[in-house]
Length: 296
Image (tube, rainbow, N blue to C red; front, side):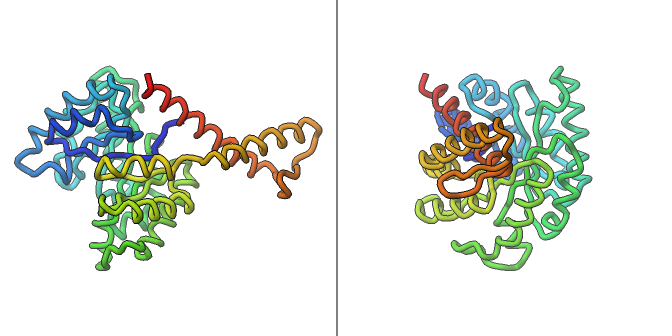
């Protein structure tokens, strides 16, 4: 299981910050060639990111790159620089159609083949930042087997909707629901938007908890101080793990007796509940392995 609890944006033009990212505890380091890199620094940022990917992967980090949108005509140059062994994923911003994802897939295959990388190795993630993108989530998910997730971009989306971004997040309710249900239907993950005030730890935890309860699997971060909270919120608690173990043990014993349901803690457990418990235990095991690797 790939952990995606916390995905930390790091400016692609800031080599000193990227060097520090080797020590971050985020599940994914997202090197940013889009918003963080001014137009006159895009070329230099590509070179910095290309050099950083092998260093970060050797340090045990999972690395994604946010490239520039297809509309900028910079995407090919971005991918030419960064598609290299070790790159785990590409985040494409401002996705509004299935064709955007198909175009990205073609480019990724081209550079994978050119660099001797197994086709499909680099996962793609669609950043949904507009009303059109929200309405076309299903077509976007169906566009490519490479697509691994839908990510919500709240700042651009609220600007497109002409509404204010609030700490309560009511204005994002519909978009979150669409992303979560579509992602689940197509077997990909839904990832939540960054929380903009990195000094507001309580607000971050509250929004992350809501996102998890709705079905998001993780959340993007814009500051290292946000990572610990995200890792905690999107990880199963000790109580949840203990419950999942009881459920799986009881259900397996019931199945061996030929029964499709069993009572656990006064509640009926059948196959869907057992599957949820199994998924939770798999996540807990993946987190334990990750933390064990970092402890070495």
